[in-house]
Length: 259
Image (tube, rainbow, N blue to C red):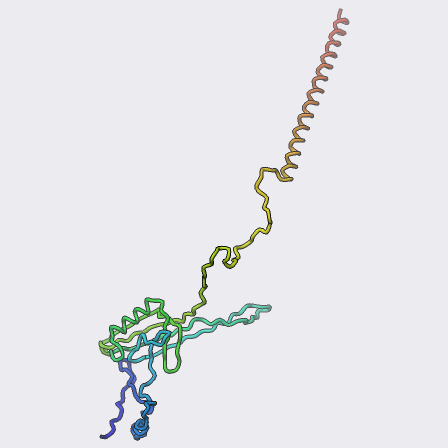
């Protein structure tokens, strides 16, 4: 039987990738067939690396027929601060979340179209973390935050081309709590400033030293005012009596002169 050459499939949108042997070049020469004839233990696999979206256990959640394109975005920001004479210095480097944009096509070969859309919509609406597996690298701990898909008559209505955007999610450690037999056996926790006095004085109605001093000054002032008022009254009375006596004496003297 003559060898049938591979068809020339153009790499355009809507045409899925064809699985070929890793040693497809040797098919025309017959070398590949000879090697496979000696492969009794099936060490040589005819499967090519797949593009899938999997969970942490490696189970494929989304297995498209082909990946149209992939775009990676990573950023490392360098923190700077100004110094003298208009200069600046860099002191740290902070990694920003990585981003991936993928265009996946599904025509029903690896998974049905309705299941393909259902899985993408579920991952888009949930907080599930996924791993994007590619032949060259595996991007771990991502979440789908944008989903767009279209079906055009030019590429066949039976072919779904979905564009997804995934962002890296960095999980942090979670606090672990344990119940104790008694509340006194729990670990101490800082709740702010704590008074260390053994016996805190109770609230009383006693005046402070400043209030006591002000009260004493007010009392002395009132006593002084009363004393001054009494002295003024006494002097006024004495002066009134003296003036009355002087007036009476003058009247008697004047009466004697007149008579």
